[in-house]
Length: 82
Image (cartoon, rainbow, N blue to C red):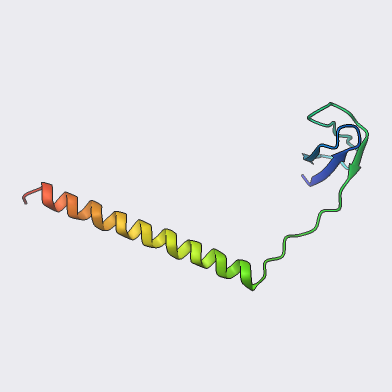
């Protein structure tokens, strides 16, 4: 099912709608109006900057998980005499 983006001309609400058929007419979830304008949907393009940002976030997340895992292991070893 394709997702289409719309702007309601009545209340200017922007929303997305999943339509089974191109001929289906969605209604505005805010005002229930049908006077809609279909927006041009473009694919999201990722550049080098967004890739670097995503990598920094992933490294930060992985570092935090490693610290938590180390702490958990140390606590287990401290509280269990094997």
